[in-house]
Image (cartoon, rainbow, N blue to C red; front, side, top):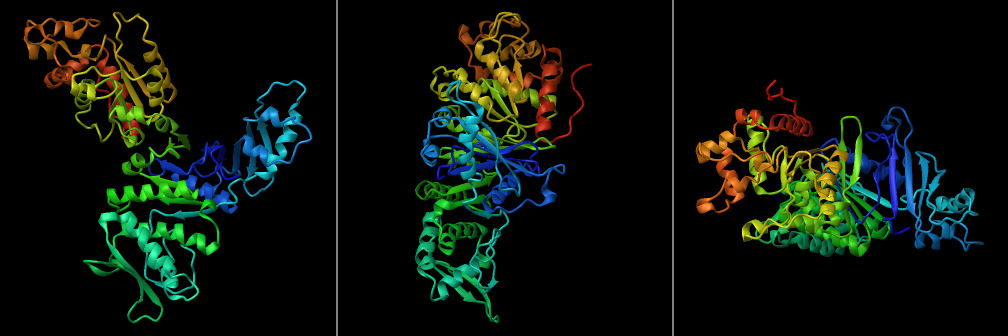
Length: 564
């Protein structure tokens, strides 16, 4: 099967994966993100075992249990077309579009039927009929990845001085790269144009104006009978040995060797390759990295190969998240086991987040994501956190603020911001499970029913283990302590009630309405830990939120600062 988007592949009892974890679909571009030691390498190891058939070492079994693969396949017309002409349509029409699942124990090629989704309701078709229909599909596709060639490039990689050992297989750490290039340049039966024309051209294509490489050479080291080194010639710098070249150039050369030399070596088309590339961003200038990523995306589109790219880089996420045939796999570890989530909601709604002024990397990589209704809310929130933690928790270090009130252009163009659609906001909240959402109650009393969007957001945040904070009063301005208002506006200022419209009481010159951001900037310096402790539910709310932010950042908790 060439199209793997209808295939799900998962593994249980393997390294950091206890229950079945893996890929709900396999797309041309698969971005893998997560903290160090979250399980990114374990996912890439799973793909290696599946494609090579290599048995998993017992030391990598989890809790002494043998690993097991779980496959799920959507029974579409392409799958049905592979089956022999049926004697009857029993099964074929009853499962068209349904999901077929089977398991394979590691080291055992005998697939075990698990279930198949019935899509019709004909009572005379029994479960046994469906199982008999499903078995030929399982037998044919017991491990659909076994036909693919898997190549992995480690984050720790290099192109070294090497002896001529005759090995033309590139190692995951970059070993044999020198041997491959010098052999293709010097060995009569190998095509030297692959180095002199193809490799050089593609290297310059990716580097663009950041590099001007004229030649790629291989030279025997002086004083050695068999050690070789690769040289690059640049117009203004002359010959530069690879040992004096930055690791960014080496990364691009290693990727290109995989793309152009490896298919040649084993006489396989690129469409049968899966490439696992770890942390391509290492020592690459962002502009060069962007061109490399777009180059790989184009290769995936035209050559039908597949890339699994693990990364910590916002550049990688932001460039490739707009690619229509990409998905983002977010791996988290709770200290016991790892979980994988396909973040399809970002790709489905990337225009929404562009309107919000948020990048994919902001949403996906933040240790804690705080959803607020607008810029003034951010000013108050940052002041609260700073006062409550003695400035030990900081924005863009321990948490990132994003807005749910629509395009920020409204703030600058004097047009009111458009509220985010209810369904879109709920999807957005599921992107990062480390989420805090603060929602204005917008009601006249505590007993009034919340708006449907607010209720759904609270439910969604609870489902993903985040924190939902519905303001105790009408809106976030009602949390401004009376002491701060008196210090700023004088003792005669009228203090709004908990459910009063703040800006109906606090007015600008000649009774005009004040700018919310300006008010927040002016009032926030008067908000102190002492006034926070006295006002509404701010103290317990901040205790809860700061505890979560510390947990998500791996920081030891502080003693409660709220009054006893």
